[in-house]
Length: 335
Image 1 (cartoon, rainbow, N blue to C red):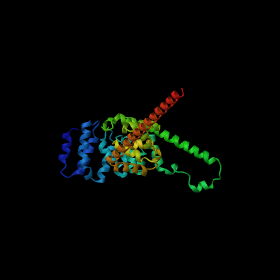
Image 2 (cartoon, rainbow, N blue to C red):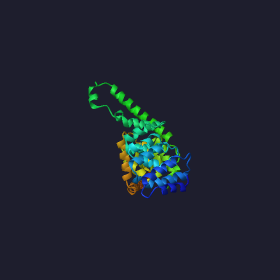
Image 3 (cartoon, rainbow, N blue to C red):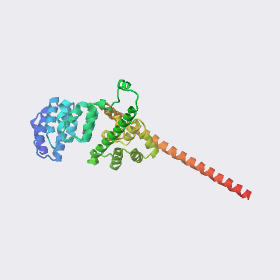
Image 4 (tube, rainbow, N blue to C red):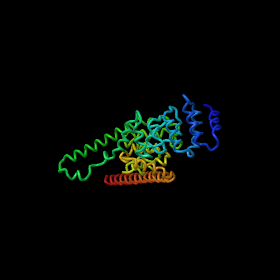
């Protein structure tokens, strides 16, 4: 389909008939066996400006049509996927245009309604399936109710059970990291890499976060922010992710990438959709300049620490030299 074909569709529809144009363009596109990149871009250029002018019924029709389309335009599919689940369900269930990262972000923004539709996808990534199951049954991650604990007689078993639960929790987190690592390979990263951070630095942050080794990630974070290791360790050593949020915002990562790193470093902070949505909201609302101010404060602390350490070393050296001189003088007088 050429641009003239799209123009013919526009000519046949009178001005202001956004509904007919919207539907006709998508229907014509879906009839193509293998559309070119140019034709995909043309469809997006034509339909996205009309999106807010068309009815819910037209959006539902287009979502259903594109869900069966093998080469659906990604931007239009993502826009439709943000609609209420009554419209987006066919795309959430079937569309190949939505990547695993898109699905995670949609669950974070829309919660269980979208998650339940995504759960019906064939060959769904196991990590996303586990996340949806956890959201469906949040009691699985809660501690034993107090009334149940009071009924137990004091035995050594609860301690052993607590250790076992802790070990199982750690094993589950490690399994999640391994699955995330296999899922988030750098396919297509170069398409939207931020020039400030650069692909190698982001990939290093992501891969070290998914190892589960705190020291590896702290080293990568120190290199990315140009701070010392002790400061990077203090950023990720806190009980919450507030400091890490500022660090990722200062690096100007997209919210999906920031969330991936945060959930790998703090997996226990995201037990339900509200926690994911809170992270995304906080990330969007955090002004980058404020985040950069915090990083500058960390760098100042790094410099201050280096100056203090150097001063201490200098004083220690001078005292040691003075002591050696006194000892040498005493030895000469004694002789």
